[in-house]
Length: 502
Image 1: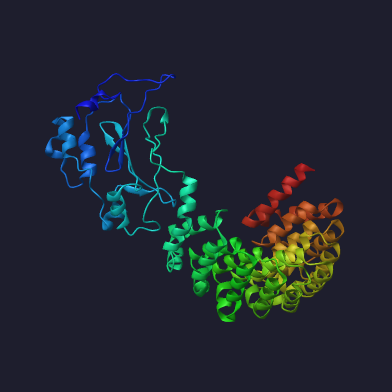
Image 2 (image 1 turned 120 degrees about the horizontal axis):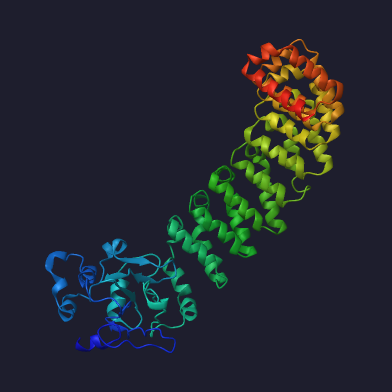
């Protein structure tokens, strides 16, 4: 230890390279632990911290700050290995899922000590770590280490470190082989599932490895698909697998209609099936999936999670392939339109189907426009049709609602439909609606209603010419009543704004 102070930064003259940067001290190999002492400008105070790092049971009150460097190193137990039961809470932390472990950096009087574990060529360390039952590896790979306080953050290379590419290919199959019989258990752990995802994403993964993972999960496929972590493994597996494995996976998925329905209606399972659906390409796979979805189509359409599966069919299959689903939507149009999930799907269906099927759906919506307008979900479907600016459909809907616009203006949901009719129907149709409302004896009640006042504000916005003047005159005539009504004051404010703008 007498020669230790002769190194740069520990009492000797500091050596520098051609750029003026200080050389790092030589690595000290003690039982395969590499200790790198950086930041040479600071002294050797505080080595009690390093001692306590290696000996957690020691007391800081033993006065090590006053001992010599030799005495300090004499007290340090560098041969200690961590007990398997304490491994999770030890100063070691995991460096991702690449099989490497790195000791925490420790303070040595302001200097930084970085310790790395090198199991290769060390029977003592190999045996110590081999007994630690730590997922997913038993023997970690050697690593490069970097001290946070190193000058210029120079990297210290492990001299015994082999090529990582060679090591990863060498250990690739052994890692999975160690997980044989435990893949499903690992997939249900957040970190374990992430490790398996990284393996499946790796372009170096072999078909043999993918097949091994598939054989492990096939018997618990449905359980994994509805698991909050396990579902990601099935998503990545379906993407990485070849057509043969993908077909087998799909067959196992749809083999039990009841379990398939449970997966489709689960929040995690629904998302997984959508990802699987994006990967299928062969006619056999497409027919297998569609034939399994047909009997449960109506249930899924009205389900908060299941309707996403049917919606994904709309994006991934042709109009001819989803004709059965279209027929179901047309046959149960009103039930679907008045459902929270169904009304969303119906709007998507109106956009993506061909003109013929769109016409069939529009006929159902127009015929039931009054009923849908007053429904808490159905009104969104009617509004959607009006906002598409399809003049035929809009005129037909207004025809169905004619004579009911005042009554609809008092309704929380239907008042929104009346507003959309005024804004998107064009001047001719909107004028007919405004005329009907103005001439109604209850028009003043509409102005003072908590929903109807929005209809009148929209009427002020779109009306023109004599019709607008008549509307303004009516509002001025009932100024006293409207001024005392909180909703009427909103209409008065809108009327003044429109007048000033003109």
